[in-house]
Image 1: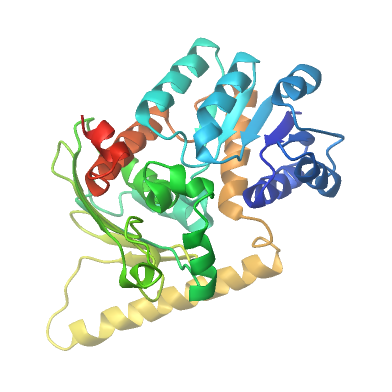
Image 2 (image 1 turned 180 degrees about the vertical axis):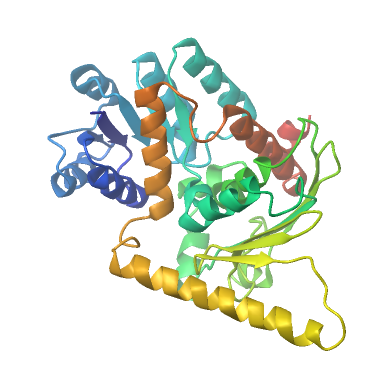
Length: 367
């Protein structure tokens, strides 16, 4: 049984607490937040016996096996360092840290202390993502991926809500080097990093401010991103982040020498894309019939999952946390390899330095 604590008791902490509650045998022992009322309400709702507003005191008294860090990203490095030095394994929400230097230091510290860390990019472990990996392992693509296309859209919602956020410059998001894009894009970048070969990745990124955001008087925030990645074996990946594209897609398309796969994260659907071409009129009919059968199969599968209450918790987060805990208990490799986390951080640094090249943060990263 693992004794678990959560540091940072905002909205995402509730998802973590719900997952911990649903993993048999493990227990949420304590919560911690600078605002003691926030720590208390999570503790009371999810059965933690203790709550704190002092991290050092919590680490000393509770001595947790695992700490989930769900604070704003600017504090991830320092909190994770304190937890590792106290002998705790750490689960860090994305972005892992605000730059690669911090990420590498935490990895080195974890390795030296024989502790484990991971990042909360849970979409890699959703049911459809796990199905995708099985098909890849079975050779569905016909070889190594040749191209990946990732759409990750973020709906800012009604303009009245967006205007409140735009005007509130005290929000922690504004002090991130990459602001909104740095907070959201690790999901996409880590997905691609899983398949990139080598460490020398070419990155071409362009960011811009949408007319929607400009209408609210904001010109510095980049809420649109287009990026191209090329690895050492010429595999390519296109990344699209948008607050304005409709529908607000979250899709992952991976293409190989023979076939492709489409992962629809929003609808939890996995679609096989055969590379085979048909003659004459069959090309206009048979592939569509095959697609219709696949969508029907996904519908039946998701309906069954719904009635089994598999959508009541964030299933990707549940799977990731469960695999991370298992790696601790069996002293095996964590679910997300460290080199992927570091590579993802380097790619994010490169993207940020390009799209915010005119800012102080961008200039520092570009040097």
